[in-house]
Length: 308
Image (cartoon, rainbow, N blue to C red; front, top):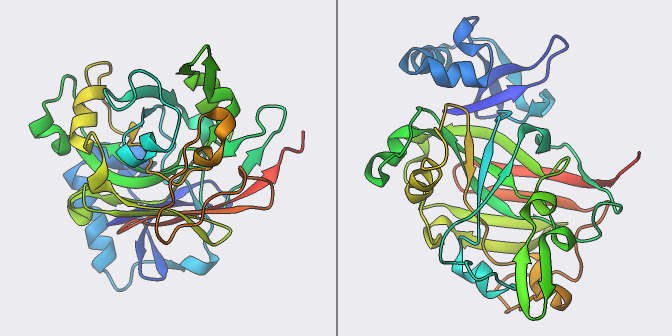
């Protein structure tokens, strides 16, 4: 099933996508919020499936429903440099491709479908976008074995890992390093959505096409099977630092096709990819970003100038 969170005058509510409509979640404490639903386990899933099958269940037209981010995770655990082709197009640190690059975003970074990514040129003049598969944790665990890792997954969604490249990439005397705090975590740097697809419906997370379009131009086109570290391996990796809890999110890296690749000033090494359009600049106000992952959907966000 596809879980969504949508706006109402009395506050956010949960529902489930069914074609061109949203089936309203039952009036039960299991649906108080997304984490409550995840924690409800089999009970909540059974109630949701019953509602989806009920022809008399309350529905809203999707076209008239304002979707929100389907979850506001307390913690977004992030893995960088997880696609070989992305590593080949950019300046790398000594650990790139040798172990997952570990950084964190929070719910303060999250915006939902249709919400704006804010371009604040006092923070950055080099805003880049990265489509990434996101894993939503469903069951608590620490030191989770790779072989059992996917048993801890509730579902999957899309995150656009918006990045301030001029804050991230630092170079001196031929050495490159990343400042991943200021380069990755800031207001609107984690558009998330449009839905969470439960793991039983999505299937193999390493078998999904991934695409990014900017103003309709195809910038990224890849496949989650090209990750260096799989979702299961990343769950194992992050669970050595944290007790993974229901509602935490892990994002899994991005493939080639970023604007960074054409930025020679920051070590970009663009290599033409068939069918893709090379960036001529970083993102600017007025641009529209579409992040698409097979079997999940399209996350669409405009970019607007900071108005403060």
